[in-house]
Length: 379
Image 1 (cartoon, rainbow, N blue to C red):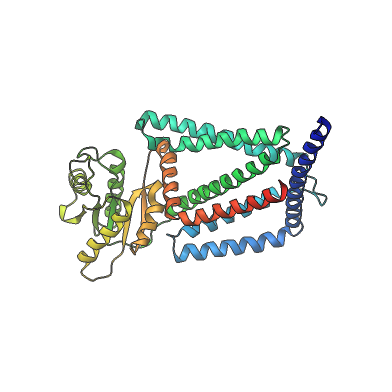
Image 2 (cartoon, rainbow, N blue to C red; image 1 turned 30 degrees about the vertical axis):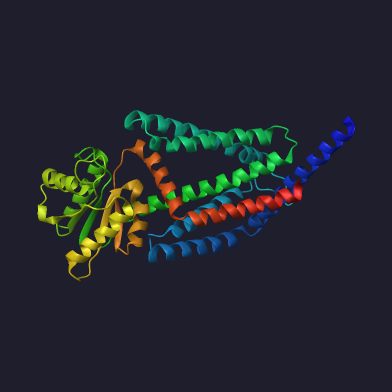
């Protein structure tokens, strides 16, 4: 094959990817145009529908992962209506305004750059204050992902890449990355909403969840939970019982429950008989299940309600475990140092992914199948 034929083949390949990108662009242009044409009526009806679905789910059961997805879809829809503004909306011929091109092409790498810098800085502060532990590097891994996506985006979009494999592969990674960020932001938004939702009932029991000891001492993170539990106890006229929940780790001299009760009695001068101990649990799921057994026995067949106290970043995931244990309990979050929250919430996010892993695996497989069909069509 001579040089001219090779050049022609490369040109033909480049036409395929251009055709793919043009078809996607036209579809997007038609979508935005349809939105704009019926903007007022469509936006109101769709918004009301999504809000109604969310409120129905939220009022009937707040401790549900589906709520986060619906809230995320609601936010995504509002974002799409903002993007459909005439400032950069494609016209009927699919032509995007100059402002639209700047926003569409420039916003993604800019956001990725800012997020990567922010995550690296937060990880640096966390390592300095909390020590060099693997779990404290979780946010830095996300930051590295942001940085790689930014570089890859600039490379694919602005470099003259003729190989369609690169474009389709980037599209595949972008879909996975986009889905992950959609779930992350949805959980973050809903967890914040759940944290600030007031509790309108008086509990009979207040469950304080353990988080680890240093020897036999209560560290600041756990102390914040116990302080909040006492605050709730006093809020309800010191009528509820406090249940301190946590077993003994291999590096702990006593059970968490013992140290927690001692802290409450010694530091806050609460009567020892008002503090019940659950000293067998080793994780949040067991905290809820074992505490329920204690409350069932203590209540002696009477109906009761409870609330649990944990750190603010942990409240939503803990609430799902409370629901799983069939506890009639909502959560209250204690304050956490701001520098600690992003990394801790990222661990919570990973924990929630693991809880519903088969849903996410299914989505991943659908995306993979979709990209496989594109590869078959264009390669």
